[in-house]
Image: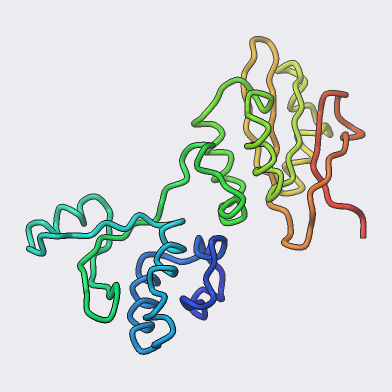
Amino acid sequence: MKDMNTKSLTLKTINKSNVWDIQENDVFRMLEAAEKDADIRDNIRHYIDIIKSAFEIEEIKIDRPEVIKKYEARGLKTGVIRLDEHKKVTVGIKKKSISRVTDLTYENIRHITADKLIEVLDRNFGGGWDSLSQSIQDIIQSGFDISTTTLPKDRLHKSGGMYEKKVADGFSVLEIGKGAWTEAIFAKLKPESEKPRMKFDQDAPANSISTTSPSR
């Protein structure tokens, strides 16, 4: 999720986490500004490696309008960047998509919304939260409060129940049908300062889990 400090980011301040906050035009802006900084020029490939953690960068070896248009048709922004003191190249740059659970990392998990997370989960599995690998669960829970519950369809939306309370508290929800039962997965982005910790929901069935921060 792009924040108000994006414009203040430079090549010297980006890392493999906050690089997910910038867009293609920001990459070209940073690289252009870096041409005036000798320290950055000497280490430009290091900074490009950081950018590549969040962006696809393809060198366009045939710099003709009809070729450029083909790259732009694929959604890449095109421009010229300097790789070293003597070499400029035309490239196409595109932000990497987060469309599968395997695209989620500790670096990018806090840079998507809860609705986007639900979209990714919905696209990738139908077996419920427990069908995710432990490593993917850990990545998700490092950035989001997650609660799950499985109830008969006619009880899930019961007035005053967990579903209603979670939605009212700002959680996004994914419902997964399991015959006469439905599993609900609730997700809400953690505040930046919170650390993950598992606990059982007091008002949910025994198999329901939640990730919260220690009380402060």
